Image (cartoon, rainbow, N blue to C red; front, side, top):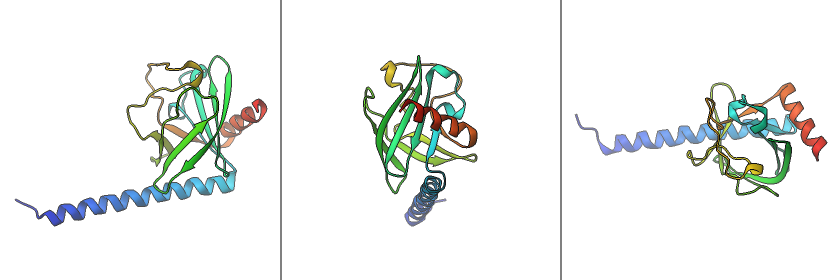
Length: 162
């Protein structure tokens, strides 16, 4: 059975519109959390770090500032700026961070907002360790939204470390 080309085009447009709608909803959720909470915090390792000496948190603030807390041999805080596009792409740059932080996509799964790199080949990144590579059962990406007591702890550490 052959289907007309117009049917395939219709399906492609429908998929694009539905994807754009979901990305728009994710962006609204992100912005609402910024307004009500004052920050949006994500943790690497899908929110379940394998070990404390290689964890990363990203904290987005309403004014375009972003902080990164790396827990390695010691806790290191990087300060920077971010930009989020209407399609949910996030570009972040950090002062003093070795290398470039990858462009990320704001997504959502059944549990919460998550961040994934635009380039799926991007793996573990840690500024203080240069090109460090880690193996393990839990992948470094996605970064998962943190809330409640866990988020407050991260915000307190960043504030203490300046």
